[in-house]
Length: 228
Image (cartoon, rainbow, N blue to C red; front, side, top):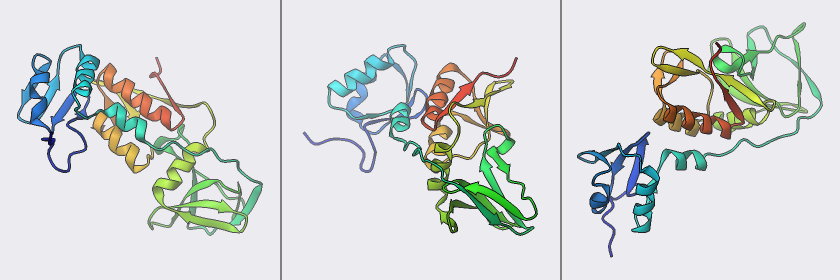
């Protein structure tokens, strides 16, 4: 039988926010009855039978795509072994920074001594000259090599100590994941889970918090409850 799925859609039933789905195939409509609220092509799941509904859809041949599926498909950071220290001479307008989740914004500046820094071969650094654009480098035995931002960020997370903790921050409407650099795919999925906030990403309920914790765990980051 020919599928009635909308051309170009990634699935018949796609979760775009926690428990909010897009219906890309009208044929699954009867299965949704009694499970939530439908508004055009949008469906908000309100029943507690989430897993049962997804199972019934799968048994009838429909393809579902949940936020958890998107998290599972995200690339994991490669674990690399760093080499010996390499001395680099940098100018007064050059800034090097290392990924450090304990620092606001996630980047800790490397302070040169007499214009020299020592970093291990293989280390990922963020580089900026004056007010120029941010670039990402891998330290090599001969100096450094430039890397695409997403590749560099993924490798940088692989170089964090384990466990690597990230403390959430209390907010009036929930808790906030502080602003931190993320590869594009991770940032996009976190944007489906959380809400924009001036200091990061706001999580307003347990479902959002659990999904965000699972996403960050793929990067090797353990979420810690707010202090106090």
